[in-house]
Length: 81
Image (cartoon, rainbow, N blue to C red; front, side):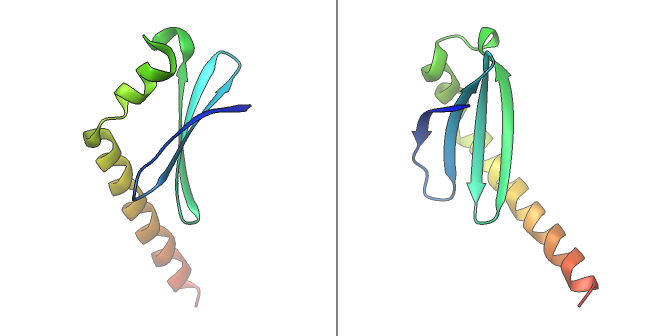
């Protein structure tokens, strides 16, 4: 797996990897991460095409999922304290 690019964003780290004819888009926020895989053949425009897909609406959904993930792990953790 190789790093192809990084997309700056103030609320999370976004890294684009390439592996086995797939793009892997990894979002990181603290100790949480989300990954999305896309076949290279399904993306028009290569790396630029991937970045065009990552519009603010999608990134806002990713950030909302991070909030949900954080809430879930804190809730689970607090049950056992």
